[in-house]
Length: 532
Image (cartoon, rainbow, N blue to C red; front, side):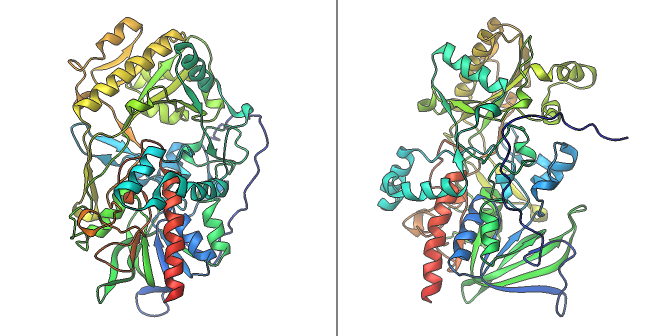
């Protein structure tokens, strides 16, 4: 039986980025043949573990400065031509644990993490918000480094935005769900802000979370990674790093194992020898790797200060066709309540993802999905007021722990009420809510049931794509894990370049801030290596 193809979606023609050919520069499962013995060995100036926002940006910076760079990526290399809208194919290829990775707490919840060349930038929503001025200026003050402040950091942010083509959407790419949110905000008197996204010619295919099928989204797969490879970098894919090589108290490389992309079994041993090691695996996997070597001892902060920007979804069903699948995800955000740490956004997902998240099965789920054209999937993001921790578990597993506070619970419930009333005011006939004991409401009056006396933390269905803070940066070893150049205080030659280093949560989508810090670390590391 042949599979039906998605309908044609007219719009502005996408400008295809240069493709990265599979070559000797990109190795995958089956390519690792040792010259002798059982270990495949490579030598470089710097080995970068991870190819997402931080890893690709620092790797490209180093390679273009003349440094010999080898990337090591646990996932596979999947070019734009391989992306499709089918969850059963895309989730296992592009997402860690096929999208089932769990944070443990009072209410266990899923988190999103890419596992492929390009990392989470391949599966994210392409938001390009800078860290707010008050956050950056707070870092500059607390860390006694004025170069982290807003004014000093502006040129670096501007460079990142040029590198990844941060821009507003073409009007033809905006779907009905975004317009519902924009008009609803206007009717309520709320501030609605149009997003800039890292895209070049986005047609609104709404496949962001499964890989951009047109190549318009400027993930690191099509931005920083091609630059790094053109500058001479190499990339070892489908290799899970198990430990660091440490000689005379200094990081000198990594040891990993080739992973079969289908069975996930580890096979051949891989070793990369290098003058410096950069860990850019994200705020869960980075501390997991470093904790194996009992690092972060001066402060005891490694794995701590874990923040997540938790969010919940509200699915509105309208009596008329909206056609949200035809347009881009998150054209804008409602920022009326940003000072309270609350953001509203449209976040329409492919049909399979919506169906999988429904609080129903069988016939009832089918009745909901028959009205997919009438749906607006929206969400509430709440800024952290708490922090969790990442620990090492059995079988080389990372175990993240995080719970929202009672104050967060009240913010979520108030926000769901506000967002729900907006949808009813716009004509929605029912809402599907993120609470295990209150799945559905059909009138504004029923939103009174969204109350802390009824909806406990354990009843809330949370989710997050934003993970930060587990190897915080600082100006002294007793209170942080890495210094202001990203180097681990108690392991010279080992650097971190991802959201782990954030001293505090930033309250917005983090990829641009990750990239900006990675460019800063890369420039300084290149200068250091060239001076040795």
